[in-house]
Length: 257
Image (tube, rainbow, N blue to C red; front, side, top):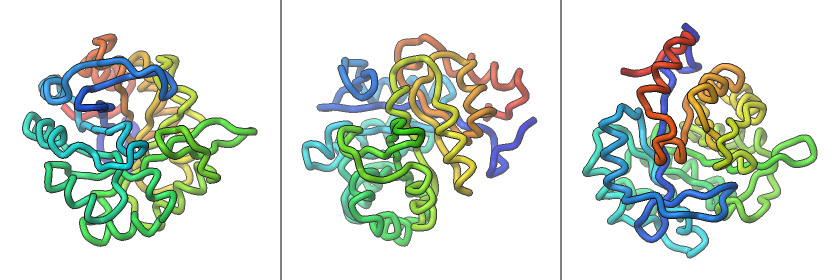
């Protein structure tokens, strides 16, 4: 079996993109459609054997507000697995409110790009294991450009360099989303994932593009990811969590029961 960088099994993570208290899903961050109730979906994924859950309030940053605490609390009450929450977290106190609502980890993106000291501040108060730095990147002139504000605004940063800095600031994980692949069901951007995975010593969660169990095998091998996140294929029952884990086991990749 191929060990992950931290010696643990590969993790499967379901993502709930939330807007106005409902789960939504789109393609390349656009054309969002309703995908259900977040608490109900969270309970379903927990029962199906998902390893972790991420809740992203996709309009919190754009609307200049914090992720909805009521939604976070409702999701947390329905699961017994780690929960990460992102959306509009601009300060250590914001992170504290989300954790108080039931999150185990907080995800920071736009605010961390504006002030990387936010990463260090949250890590100092809650530990690095509670800090997930989300990086949304798209292909650009042979490299990968980072975008902020839910993928809408070029951040003037390069993805690999920013991942290294985030680690040095105290990030415990990188949530790496390919904007180009997001929602396409055509597979993860394994080149992007491998570039970041090889550059840092903390776990990298690959996101964007999962359309089949085979895509998870690819991102864990070619992309060298530690975890992989998906939304559409799980929401739409295109592929069940247990089926993905069975496929990974057949390819010699360790997974949690």
